[in-house]
Length: 205
Image 1 (tube, rainbow, N blue to C red):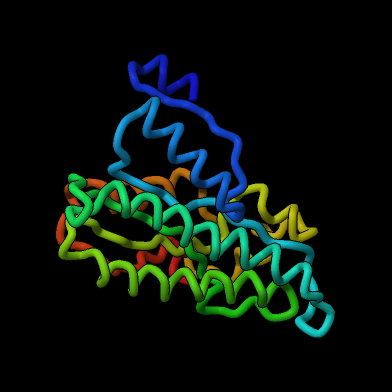
Image 2: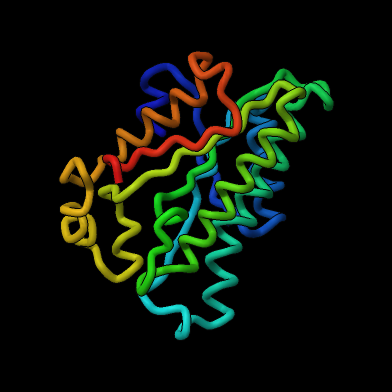
């Protein structure tokens, strides 16, 4: 955030749990008050839990993962659409949802629940894109593969990228900046005719 301000931009940080509706409302109200009307949203909040088989998962785990990864994206997109849509007097805008290659691969013996939540994001992206396309809003998704981020530690294996990178055609894990550049492109006017698209950033996996 400090880097944005130093570069002449405006930024705020708001602590919120996207799976809690009241937190999402408060988040968007702060943005309205301090930054003005929303024109771009990146649904990047997501969690996974320890590796395990489906037969070991309890309802508490499933609720946590699906609430953060699916409900949170729905709630944030809902509030963004209310502000962006020409139907509500908005100027239009762009939404990018973060999916995962896990939605295609299933993540057996590790986190099928996480993979299923990202499958829901793929479907959500396509449906919402069609719903709001005529209202000036583009909705796309980026589907990363194995990326060097801290989320792997949450699954109990911080070195997972190095373990599985030999299965990636490019023989390496991805960097967060490579995912960020794909997101920025989808948000930009360069992607002005793209909506309902799911862009794989997976090294060919």
